[in-house]
Length: 163
Image (tube, rainbow, N blue to C red; front, side):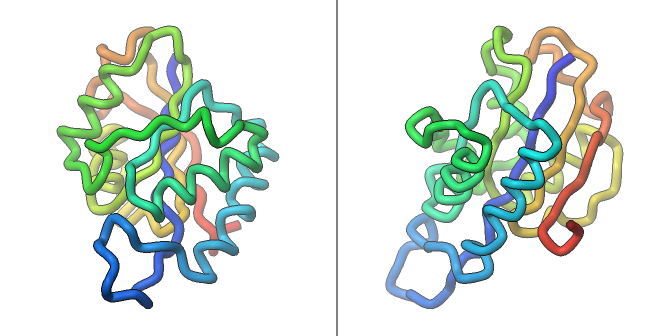
């Protein structure tokens, strides 16, 4: 059994139009939501074997904040360029190529790819993973390369306004 944690970045700021999209920081709500979600995940006993983030500032900042709440040093977060506005195909490839020694993977990225992938993987209609939302998906596989669309089970769907 493998577990995939899909975390959409926290709410970002549009205050600085001179910044490129990849550089945008979080806004106040985003900064406030990260510890709330991190504490909730910690309370569930979440302890991912590996964290992988989009290189976007808003995604990596979210990853660092949640990692801190889970007691994982920020330097242990991998950066995967392909997670930046990834398609379902990109996300699938990233997950399928995860080291099989890892039983759980937490990825940080963006919509619409994250919602689309979670829906395809589980067969559930989530409609939208909101900012700082988390889809926890259990996978009945022993190798990440055996990932099959529709085979995942949505264990939990968590978002700041829902907790």
